[in-house]
Length: 137
Image (cartoon, rainbow, N blue to C red; front, side, top):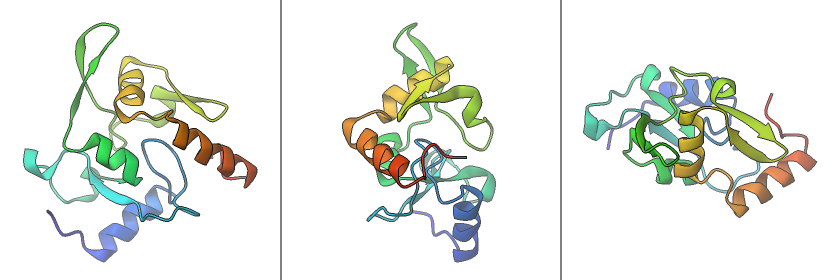
């Protein structure tokens, strides 16, 4: 496992505005500390540099794991998983209340692979909505 310097960790957290860059939940109010995710995993020669790191909640980080590609179940195509350093969240996803909707094949495959609308996430986002933290800015 790669060691991430404290200064780089702070940069990633600040850049993400303390939110998971996949599902959008805020780290504020969560018990578990979010992970610094290697978008291109270390096992695939991903570097520990700002351009390859994203803030991810524990659930998204564990579901993503070392995957870089997903299958679009609608078309059977292999797609790259959403990359928060190279793609804009709002181009691939939208909010429908507390649910994440995939707008593109990459968005739909990422929603499905990371299970972004599981009941626990919907409950967390509903609570965040009451606290004024959802939807993200």
